[in-house]
Length: 477
Figure 1 (cartoon, one colour):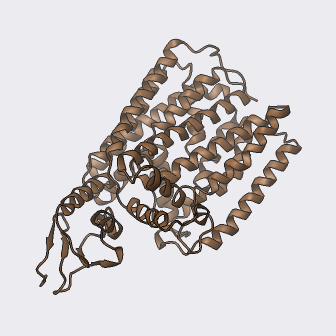
Figure 2 (cartoon, one colour; figure 1 turned 180 degrees about the vertical axis):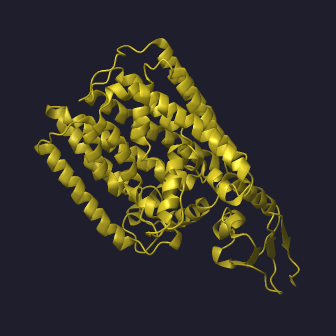
Figure 3 (cartoon, one colour; figure 1 turned 90 degrees about the vertical axis):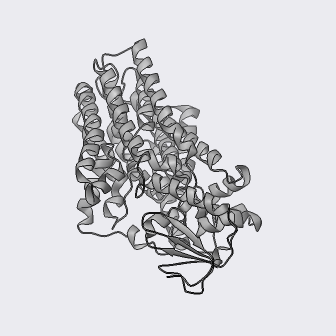
């Protein structure tokens, strides 16, 4: 256990600060509701609609007959079938659900923070939990899970992981029926996390690290049985995952090389609230703008962490500080090895315990208003800066794709449709699935090439700068 802090009853100003930060976070994310479908969204919509139209049983998503790169039956196939059935494939409604699930996941962080605060005998545990949830909800790394419906797996992973860890920590100090119920809920929460995203396989290790942080080192029989059950469940999932998945794209392959350095830099950037687009800009240019953007997001976040940790240092032991770092590294573990792809939301679970430690150091801190203001400045700069970018920014690319699709919907587009594409990254925002879904064309009748055949009609030509035209007369050059 750790020494008690001096804050017993949070002042009204503390709760007001948390509420104001919450309002800032909510207003920051609300524009995401108007994001169109883009990229993999259309792949999942198309597949879900076909599955529902064929009356395929819901359990078939959990025990598929065809191999896929990912086996995420809860957060992909199953979820998108609900989108198709209940939401009518409406982008606004789907993004509303995405935001609600993100807020629920942040509530899970608050619940875990409450369990940890009580286990560590921190004062103002409720205020600490509330601030942890709000601060976590506002991190810029959640940009894609809120703006991209296909990334909903991340919010579900965070929700079920935090519920699992919170029950695990609460159970250590509970007794009787309450203890039994808490331990019994750990395995179902872990199962749901595993069915949402692969990195949930690391949850057992995180359970150990969290108990190291709280100092609840004595494990009774029920806890040992629960831990062994979680290990067994993870082993079963690994076997099923290997059975139902095929080889991933090379960008998702694991390797040992210079990618470790690149991914370590990215990991540091994600925890510092630096957006992915800023790192991309630092590589492709313009670099002065990228450096300014990185500084505008990272420096306020790092300053907030320093002020919070300096205040929280007396009430936290060396073991706990080491546990915070260990938790982040373990949670991000496999992403250090990715050969190429790296997105900020990969660090969503890794950021949980550092955010809880930040909240603990901020509550009762004379500089709390400054800390909260710095958090808001960092997140708004990261999120709004990303939203304002045109191609090759992901959100700008999504809106470009929507404008093109709306233009095509007003024309009679025959098929087979040939697509002359020079920039595959830009075209990813639409894809063959997007054209097929929005234009009501069989996906097999859409042919993507670097140049349309001379006799092809119609031919959709997309230039490098995003200008497009639909040729219907053949003889394309």
